Amino acid sequence: MNTKHPIDDFFHSKLQDFEMEPPMHLWENIDKKRSFTYRLRKSRYLQMRLLTGILLLSILIAWQIRPKSINLGAFPIPAISSSQTAVTPQDSAEDAPVNNQTISAESEATTFSAIAPVKIIQDAVPPYSPKNQDLAFVAPAPAEKAALDPATTGTRNHAPEPLPENEIGALQYPLAAIEALPLAPIDRAPRKWQISAAVMAAPERAFRQLTPVNGASDAFIDARQAYETPWLSYTMGIELQAVSPSGLALATGIQYNRINEKFDYYNPAEKRFIVSDIKGPGAFLVGRDTTVISGQRWKTSHNYQSTLAIPLLLGYEKSHGKATFIIYGGPMIHIYNDYRKDLQNAESGYPVSISPETDNYLVASTRTRGQLSWQIRAGVQYDWKPGIQVFLAPQLRFSPGAGTTLNKEQYLVSGLSAGLKTRIY
Amino acid sequence: MTEKELILGCKRENSNCQQAIFRMYAGKMLALSMRYARHRMEAEDIVQEAFIRVFDHVHTFEFKGSFEGWIKRIVINTALKTLSKKSFSNEQIGIEQDFDAPIDAPADQLMGAQEILDIVNELPDGYRVIFNLYAIEGYSHKEISDMLGIQESTSRSQLVKARKMLQQKLAKLQKIAV
Image (cartoon, rainbow over all chains, first blue to last red; front, side, top):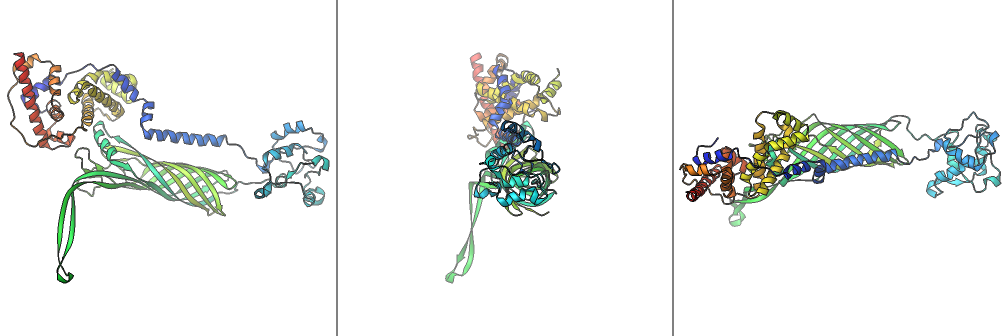
């Protein structure tokens, strides 16, 4: 205690335990400002986390309630025996949508309803276009009729009997669907695990949250917030992806992540050395002049945090034609972290590095390896060429916690992952 | 409930415990921030901001020192941060003649804490902050220079000038009282 001077003693004794009545509204303001809704309005980091949650939830809900496409291999055909030939249109319309069973090869008397399946086909199958010839509505050609005739094939004993012309009228069958129905249901799902190699890159934007280690390091946080700005970040990586017949997927590989920042600071003692040659007669070099210019100026230091990580991702893939919906998420084990940071020292105002190689460094509390972080990405994959797919997927990742002795820092990084994928097994 | 139980309640984000802690210390902290702030409203803002930080970071308090001291330090830091926009632009290096004259008895007896506080508040910002940190809070010049980002010699010279001004004001009041 520095109370040796009488003035100091006098004021200290009078003011040390002095109290004032706080106004009533003060507590209400504190309570309000600490509420989640208030902070949500103020904090961009919290907003990002909430948006992420909403995005993931939306994807999940959209996936659950997506319209189910017609599987031509399990087309709903009511099994009607020859004894049930008197089917009215109303009956057929009621029966058809609920009957998904495949027509059995053993039921010799099985035949098509002339009305109900065609109605469904008209609803489900797009109209004819040159690009969609497989599903074209065409009347069976004589040769095709012959192929469908059990008498000629000897195998398709359950194929539809030809209907009288006046009953067929304008009704037409999608040949591909009919061909596929009884004998060869289309099985689009792969029967074995598929292993693919992928290469990817993602430009990113990092959102940072700085947390003081204690209440006394707030000034340090404020100084960092004032002088540091985010810069373009990115991720590059290669992955091995294994996809099961059910669509469940596993992925691992190696990723290089880099978060870039700029740090602007005022250098009050900037020195610039100008060396100029002194030339004599005949342009011979006779000496050098060194001029030192001292001054003050703003400088920029480019900081970064780069990491090498092994992702251990769990995913799901679902194909629709040439497009595949993909979602992957899981932890990443960081095998190497590297930091370069010059920070504003809140006390002296001068920049200080966290690198131990410098004389007066700020001790970083960051581990160099073995940290865990999290990543998730969801997007679309497209069959570009045979065996090669391209994919585009927005991704989010939480970088490992970092910091110094005065603060902790956490980064939420959002980006757009793009890459190529090729099947290797 | 004991203070420790209240602190543990604050760590669990119990609103009643937070309110109890606020009521326990708000009066002292408001008086403390009044010594640094330029006016009452600024002092209230400082207290408000400081208590938000207290409750945000109470989980880092490890019962190693007094809780009041911990809160006080947060209030002081918040006050300094508020004042930091106004720099010590008029600082002068060098120590002037110091005054060691004792305080006259009548001033000591007649003046209450509020009057004393008013006198301190009449000091210029730079003088007032350094006088408070050194004389009332008990920080050393080295600590003050680190906190404010100024030289130790600056802290000393500001303190000397603050004392001189305070002594002149006390003397003036003394004459009026007599």
